[in-house]
Amino acid sequence: MQREHIHSNNSNLHSGYCICVDSICEGQIPIVRDAASFVIYETEEAAQREIVEAMILRLQEFLDGEREYDDAITVEEYVVPVQVHSDGTILPAHCKL
Image: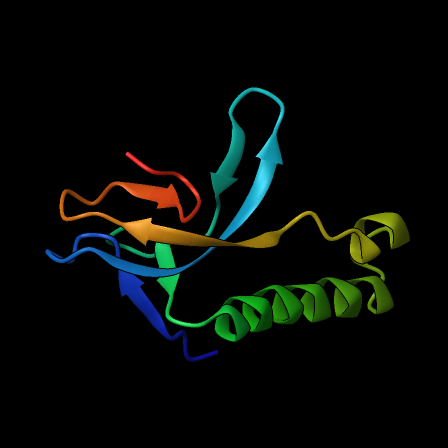
């Protein structure tokens, strides 16, 4: 898949979307990274498509006998609107500093 994303090390404040999961220890955490940073998607749809493509892969692994059914159909990832600050800090869009 061709990812449409913005790296979090851009110098201007901008908004985008992150794919996150909930962690017992850390709460909401972004999970998709590339070599440079967390991946920030330009559109909500681009982030949603990434989740769907991962789900399709898990379903295919189930059909191929490589993954259990419950694991294949479970989707823990979700999309969060974020603001990326000039220092690379990524915050949910609803947070105000």
